[in-house]
Image 1 (cartoon, rainbow, N blue to C red):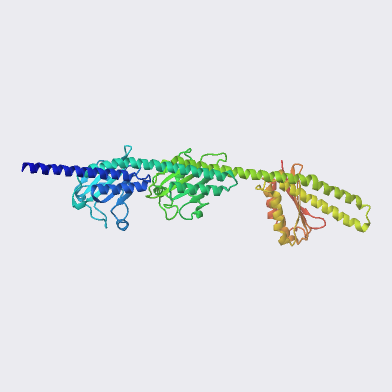
Image 2 (cartoon, rainbow, N blue to C red):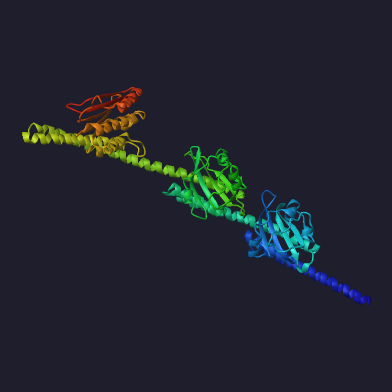
Length: 557
């Protein structure tokens, strides 16, 4: 009998050893399995599945603790179908017993979840759960998250061996997770540098600034896996959206001005190049009194805002990379990469400005060459031709002298027009031209008069007239032409503007009925007051043999 007992005890020990070896083999297989690849998402799924298999749990979950160390930002489940998850509702954030492991990261076993004083109960449609085992996961001595296992197979409680096995798995999981995160960071940085090379290559050739900014917004959103990325440029006291990219067509936001009631954006611009990270952009916008959703239909959560570094073009602004609320991404860890993209945006704006300046310089050089050719060649030849015609005038027959005289007058008019064209060519293409404004004004009144007034310009009109005098010249011409249309019944109107000898003279004459004593002169009186404020004068008189002359004079020095 004693021998039988010893044999039974020996067999029991052998079974325990075999069970221990089997558990150890399963643990080693699980550790090898969870490190099969370096993709973080699939790694987390395998950790939960392996923990459930090792401990014999029907349900399992891995909760990832957020940067604040107080709530769960991600929840990976096992044993629950997608239909059940949808019926249960939002994932837990770490209250009750789940939060107990966040506050005290130590292994925890319970016979019945409902008996614990921190139990909040289960939401509706939640499957029943009783036995519980919770184990923390650490990476480099920092809490990453917790493993939650419930419903031991057969309705039993989780054992001390289950706790030791899952704790060992959690220790190995911490190393695997850390490696997966390092790999993900390395891959992300590699991709960011590839994209920066792509953007740099674009800017080496001819490109459009808006095209480059849109590419920067698109690539920054793709790499950070954000919901929306936008580039805002300062315009005075406001910020203007220059580029935006998201899962839908957000082009309608381009050109939109951001409300001034968002102090966080103003803080970023004035914060001397510091990257700002917001855990919950939607809440910040709500607290600031702005829209709670931008774009519509998206609730934005963790957001990285990097100001555009100051450049030669003195361009201010920011790059915003925003995740959708609840998304799992480590944008904060890539703040230096977001700043790198912000630097690319500044470089794109500077390169585009340099490209525009270069094109403008080429246009101005070409215009200057054309102006020299017109002055040195064309005008001189016309002038010589006119002199020859004048010399032939006294030799020609009387019936030909009139025709020669008209030809000389046409040549003089052509020379005046060419000189006017030369002055216009010497103006920058995007600068205001008084000569062009006068031509447009004369053309405007051509329909009302039934003919086009004759415009004669002498002297450096666009370079010799001060900016303060230009509006008054246009006002004199406009008021005079308006009076001619309403009262004069004229058949000919001449508009002459002459610059020289330290003054500018604008003279409008017509051959109409003349100005009578009963004609209202409030408009002309206003012109007189304006001229006097500039140190000039307006004179109104009759034209020979009939008509009216309005003459405006102002100093140019």
